[in-house]
Image (cartoon, rainbow, N blue to C red; front, side):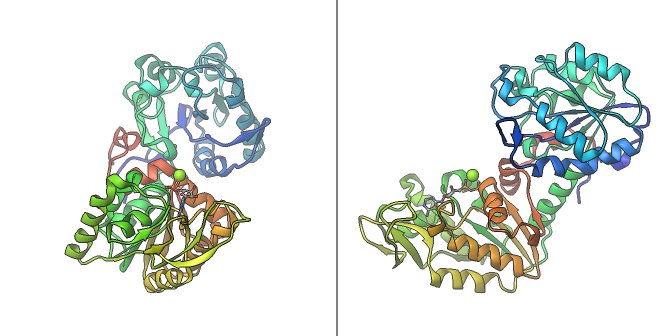
Length: 397
Ligand code: ADP
Ligand code: MG
């Protein structure tokens, strides 16, 4: 369990509370196309409002790189938040984030009111964890709440630096939930415990594989990264994704799994084609005998069956990385089968990773999982066993 102070450990009545949320939502033509991250922030905001706090929300959106980019303004988020909360959320539209509007609004607020600041990344100091922005943000409030799990792996002004200049710093409910789910799964799982890894690159997940081999009973590797493992074992993988530089690492991981008594499963068959397209002609091939001009783009039927059997009796399953090129329906079957399998399991099922979460939601299994992390990069760093900077700065209970 998380041993950090949370919003349940403080008294905010009559106090200005700065809340770092993750409102980094996709916006197209001024319309928010996926509001998962906004709804995920509501429990903390509602709690602080109910307790009579004067709630000042802040977040980044996209990558404006320290410049004012109007298309990355948080204005649409303020409107949607007003609707979801059923009370006005005033938008302090200062290009410098903490300017005349924010200062006036923060000074005039009454208990239970909510305002939202402009995109923190409009200021160049944000991503450099610069003192000026940290102090500006802290000047608005005496209490700080970090509820932005999706950005907790970054030490930025609004996620880390600001805590040096406030009286109290705690985490919100979303952060608490994310860390408890991921943390309990990794450190104190109900066993058998399986991890399913996929996605495109071994290199982006080396530390995850290495760390999880210390923890799991079963490790399943599929997706694009699987082919580097197959090749390392002497297979012919045609034009499939390969990271030459990681062949040796793959062999080491297979050896480590043996030493640790972890059951490591690799695909045995796959769906091959010569191009990534729904018009492509496909065939099933043994994974270690793929013709030179073809590539493996999804796991095959034998593999699906084998992976299913392997997790059948597991009580905790973490999944990161799709099993194939799921964006193209022809190569989405493996990912879909795994999503369906997890949805039916009587186990704690946790999805981490941006593309995996998107796949599970897109396939309609979202509400069947125990937990879908709202932070892609942050959940990966967590699975790597790293302490997240945005959590490290929060006081312990
Ligand atoms: P996550 O965001 O969940 O951590 P990744 O970013 O590591 O996942 O990987 C997702 C990408 O991997 C997807 O875009 C998917 O198309 C790609 N992918 C999966 N399997 C293959 C494959 N066999 N060949 C090429 N790309 C693949
Ligand atoms: Mg990704």
